[in-house]
Length: 435
Ligand code: SF4
Image (cartoon, rainbow, N blue to C red; front, top):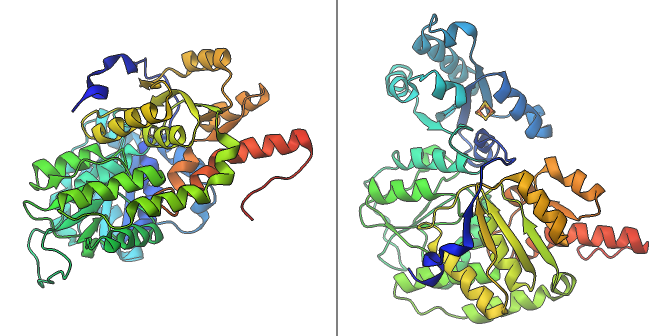
């Protein structure tokens, strides 16, 4: 580890008084990704209200998640937790026939010290259905870290022996990628690696619980998202896998670095990677013209901030501040190094990285700096717009397809939308790029 990591002056830590989604929100994308799953959030009405509102229209589509709402009797330990959960899980088993049930622990189960990890295995044996416990509560984690807790719990369940030994025609080293991405993006990244003669052994998670990838000691693992540090640690410590530390495949620069790092570990000389990156940059030219020289401020709420900021700096933007809920300097070391290199290349100052930001202080700084764009949550978006500052909802980056070469355009589509919209309102014209 060099330079950037030791340069502590770019890192700051504030009070943690900031807006973000509760990590239980991860059920909304994970239930769609793992098609035979059911998520049971064990919490209070507060959690239920949050899910119901944050998930919007999804709640009308018979989602495979539900709340186990705790009552007075549960909290004062008058009811038997085991019997109550058994009753609910049997009902879920009968009505929805899932392949796995996830129990999502919340703030309340933490505070009343409900022993979910203790009850889970007993009940699993009793009702004959896998039960995975993940503590995705708002006391310890922010937004996307919810997925991290679920994947870390799933990592324990990956089988460690190969049933039917399928020999790869590409190479003998095994590569498992972790991070939940839509199937189309999974296919795109698999294809990019196949172009380099690298066969992806499996993904954690995959679309069915029964198809979890085999993870053996010595297998290589790599993450696609910056918020998966617990999963990475679990895979290394518990499953004895080798972590490939690389920048994340967000933006053409990040994707190239990600593939390059894998090739490096697999002793493969990358083919046509430089040209592939160049073509993507050329295709982005129209967007780049719109954002070059413009300034951006990340308030920070989803942990994708460093990768996005690095990509935007490479696009020619000036980043004033990168707010981030939690910063794992080890897991993100390659990404921070790429950020440092990108700043040098683009001849701009390294932005300040503010962990656990204080939104109140940030608004003060925004007022002084007057950035061209603020990437923020919904709580501050409209008030800032009313004060003449362009904003982009940060949550959209979590749900949009932003990984790999082909989706770089979608990131810039999101970034430039408020700028294009506000310019067109002022000029009275329409300058939409994408039809
Ligand atoms: S922060 Fe805690 S109480 Fe609030 S919704 Fe999340 S888990 Fe529930």
